[in-house]
Amino acid sequence: MMEQKDHNTWKSWSLVSLQFICLGLVFVSGPLLADRIYLLIPELAGLALGLWALAAMGRGNLNIAPDPLEWSRMVDLGPYYVIRHPMYLALLLVSLPVVLDSLTVFRLGIWLVLLATLIYKMGYEESMLLAKFPRYEDYKQKTWRLIPGLY
Image 1 (cartoon, rainbow, N blue to C red):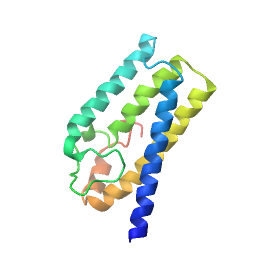
Image 2: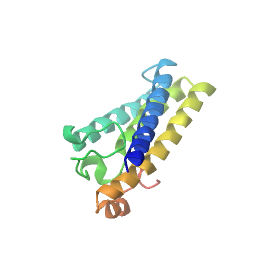
Image 3: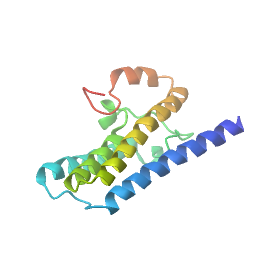
């Protein structure tokens, strides 16, 4: 059992590290804010969504790793009422506009690695949430994973 927990910890922190490396590379290789208004609006919307998700989750429930904390509770309020991973959507909304505003193959490639990492991390996180929270399966049936009406 301890080996499984160590493996999960290693996997969780590897995913978090890759996520932050990608975000760091996106933001050090170009501007922090999009110059064009049509890109700045979704970037700011992503920031607002992230803050709303943090507020809905509450301080005691927040964990940077995908593993649910021992004392955590299932959150289905605020943006979590509609989508299961609003913080991941917020990261994508904040980072994609700056990539598009100063587009290079490198920056787009890094963003695609970020997208793939978050999609994988969502599935991994959901498997742990299903094991911890009996009603998570019902919650999954009523919500979208990332983008309402699409995915």
